[in-house]
Image (cartoon, rainbow, N blue to C red; front, side, top):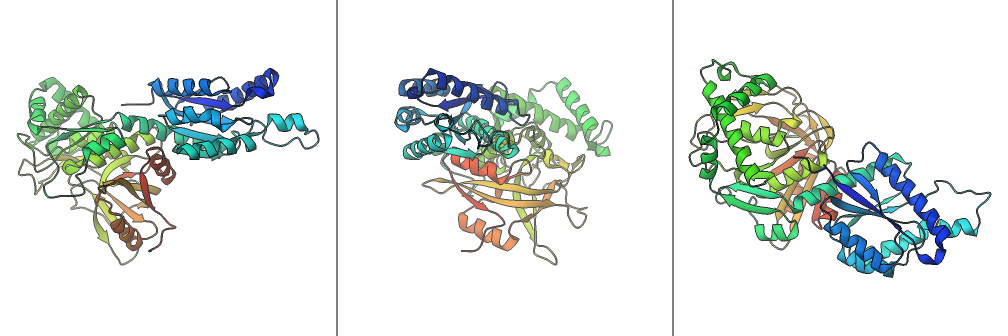
Length: 483
């Protein structure tokens, strides 16, 4: 489930032949040093591969075509060390199919005030060359992130590393396959959308399989796999006594394990990394999948409840961005509000399917009745989300003529009271700037009730995701006000 294995970004440096071979050799040496500094940073999640200095149009076009064709290349970092006339970049930029980061830097961190001369000025022209390049990027309409500063600055390297994470996620989204088991919940608008346009715009392929395809896979799981998974549950989680080996409801736990194994088989066979279920379309399933879905999300799969394929794709996308970072990412739903007394809060949850990567403590595994779906009582993990400042809640909506990301920066907090009778995992958060303002702006923007809650991804990551995927973003944060 890791898309980072073998991933690279290519480091391109612009110059021109008029400077002569000696100067170009200096450019190459210094650009290798900048590239190497980025690649050595522990936060960089991909390899940074240096490319020979770009000095003419045909070579630029060929290099960009090679980057497009390389399945391991997730993006390009471009820096104009000297002056690199922009017209020679136009054909290459027109052909660009991978994410771009424009690094506006220079080899020297400080000016040599006492010795600076015109030779130094002619060599160190990033302030000149990158403005020419930036104009070309804007003229062609290349979506990109621009980072300004020296590579010895921690913030510069951190921003580039975060861009690389989003670039990997955009590539993942472009080849993602989402399996829908049945259709979306009947009569619901926001969970539906144009799957053809989603594939054209993002690249994600969304297709439906009958739920009984899953039923068949679940029934075909060997008992030995079921036993092994059930034993793993008892080791990893605090399993309710009645579900443990020898308990009177142990068979329900084993069926949850059978569902997990069957789901994995179906998704693996279809090379899918995200999926949906729907409580209105369960076919021969004995339980609405709860624990199985939570476990798959824990391993990095995207998920959407009630057939919501857009949030399934976004759950997977944000999990890729946040892979290996502190915090977690989960399918979520704004369920109910606390308007007061005290700080207004949102209680987020779902019927069953909240990912344990956001849990504050070791989850319990429990079984409780579910008043919808007309099936057996489902097994699920139960926990409360860990506190986290500046988390994000993201929704993807189809507005008919375009897609829009609607996002809110939130602070996940501990519940002020125990929740002894709430039989599902949950999260409590304070929306920024406030519940009333954020909810009003969310409603005006057309955001969904289904979201992705991430304590690993931040608002800057979402801005980058929107830019690189050419998708409109409405971001609600502490600076937001009513119109």
